[in-house]
Length: 87
Image 1 (spheres, rainbow, N blue to C red):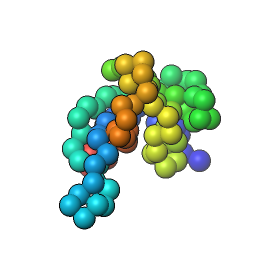
Image 2 (tube, rainbow, N blue to C red):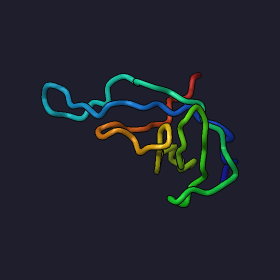
Image 3 (cartoon, one colour):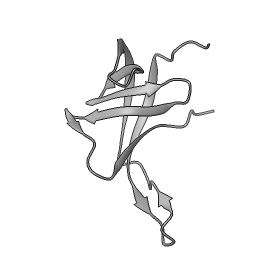
C-alpha cells in the first residue's frame, strides 16, 4: 500500500443539475488546503484539517467520506471533493 498523503486540496461545490437533469457540480465556491492530523475520523479514514475545513478522506480512492466547514455540516446541496492533482 502506498503512503498516506500529508495534504490535499479540497473543493466545495454546489450540487446542481444541467438542463437535462444530469448531475453537474458546477464550479468550486471555496477551496481549502487540508493537512493530515494523524487521527482517524468517525468514518474510519484519516482526518485532515485546514482553513476551517475538517474532512475524512479515503486516500486510496481520494474520496471525501465526511466533512464539516467552519464547525458546521456542509450546506444542504453542497459536495466536498479532492481537487485534481496538477501535472
